Image 1 (spheres, rainbow, N blue to C red):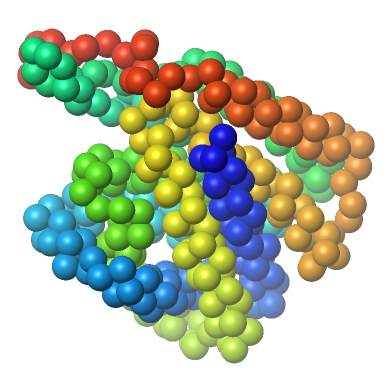
Image 2 (image 1 turned 60 degrees about the vertical axis):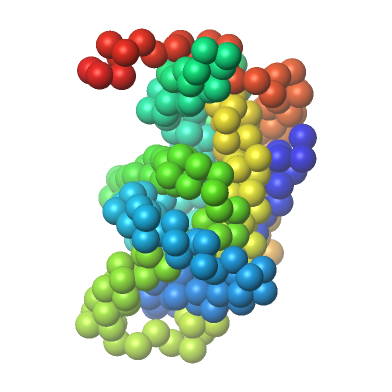
Length: 330
């Protein structure tokens, strides 16, 4: 339950991303600056946290031991996640981007078979092939139905180009974020904490963000003061607070695919926060009765996830299958 609450709180802060990204696009800001400024602004805040905790040496040591996995999976988890989201905001409203992003609650569940868990037994280390937690997947799909209900009234007013360009990049992001996050947990192996992992993933992707920022300058010149301020707010709210809270929640259940899927499903609540934010800040219309049905389905789905998580044991996924030498060598 604590992990689910952390996930929901993270979703609230992460919702700022969709609202302000859309606001920046409506005011003429380039998506290239919106994406790069967030991570560039994150660096000093994370640096202060790491220095205050006096564990800078450890995270740098871990990066130097495995530079390619750190760079590769951080690129997947951060760059392939956030750049497509800001690009999509240039074409579609915040609710479309946020709604499509909810595919991540199913994407995260489907990624289970890509991971192998090592379990220490009396006879040695046993390799466990993770499987898709079907109960969590069914509940996540149920939540996804609620999200579809929310978008039915609005989708009728959009052109096909808006729907494609406003959603297809987000589909890529929806798979990249949980994949990069889970793979980095695997690379770190519990040797660094959440703060160190977020800091490490941020600094190794800085070269990519500098390239994107350079493209932003070539394409649109320097960002406006308004875009810089809004990117700064996104960096603190979504980049630092939301990312750390969400990664902390996933770290706590990293060895249990079912619980991990439940925590990732908390991202569905972003739609609620984005709708409220757009109504208050961007004068979006109030939801109609179809959208309210969708909201109800999402809430019921999160309650089911909470109930499902409370039933799960702390041990490994019982449906996992030990791998033989044949499997490991194939």
